[in-house]
Length: 92
Image (tube, rainbow, N blue to C red):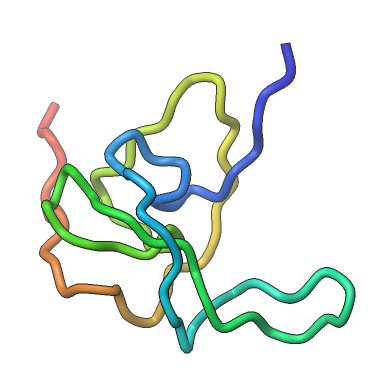
C-alpha cells in the first residue's frame, strides 16, 4: 500500500477541516508552469483549538492518520487567527 506524503502541518492533521482558500502574504506555493509565487493558501477549522487556520500552520496538537507519511517543514511567521497551542505535553 502506498502512503501519502504531506507536510507535518494542519493539512495532514486529523483536527483540520478544509473550508476553502484565503489571500495569504506568506503563501509557500508557486505556480507549476510559471514559477511565480501564489497568493492564496488553503484554510479551514482546527477542531482542537476552535479557530480558523491556514493548512500550513504547525502546532503541538498535531495528530495524523497512520496512512500518511509526514515530513518536517518550517512554521509560518504568523497564524490566520491567534491561538494558544498546548504548551505542555503529557508527563510520563
